[in-house]
Image (cartoon, rainbow, N blue to C red):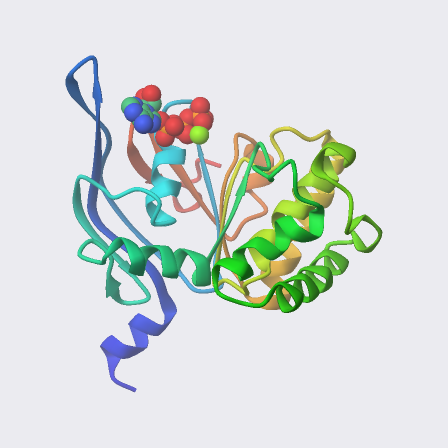
Length: 239
Ligand SMILES: Nc1ncnc2c1ncn2[C@@H]1O[C@H](COP(=O)(O)OP(=O)(O)OP(=O)(O)O)[C@@H](O)[C@H]1O
Ligand SMILES: [Mg+2]
């Protein structure tokens, strides 16, 4: 196979000299400095670092939720920085699942309807979307909670709903921002086992922000953010 085509197929995300700036009190502040990073398909990658170091900003850029101030971003070999808002939204919907610390479920919808939502955005009928949501909820162990609203679920159950919602469209990438940050240690362990199992069984690429370096050690790759710069961990014995 052609070498460049081969690398496109296995490189899911490539960042070249990506920087991000925000305005603070009218002054521009650089929060990511010249990030170079390649995420390979099927990889598990933990992102650690102090509060304010830029982890969520980087995750939002990887997830096509934020546009960097400068640099290049390739998703599956395609340049994302000149993509239209519609193309980005479509890619997010089809290729990326997000899991957040605070679950971000819609309170008025049942577990099943929360999970069905990304499929409805894709244009599936309500019936098909709900049917696939049901299967996905069964796979995360919530077969008996289909009709419960988020307020009636425990923290761990809410996060399982969020994971089912992230997975229902069969994405190639899961981005998780401290998904166990609001959970007790046993529930956190169950959620971690679920996420890592999904990587093993479905080959889904997993990038997760965590404050927990022991947890990060269970990932294939560890990256540390320090003041908006990346340090690759394991190779330098820092983890
Ligand atoms: N929308 C924004 N506008 C202005 N500044 C922002 C914005 N989002 C983030 N920042 C700033 O960018 C820096 C990086 O923030 P980010 O949320 O990426 O950090 P983090 O590593 O995820 O921190 P935490 O561990 O506390 O979640 C911080 O100094 C933050 O104040
Ligand atoms: Mg953060």
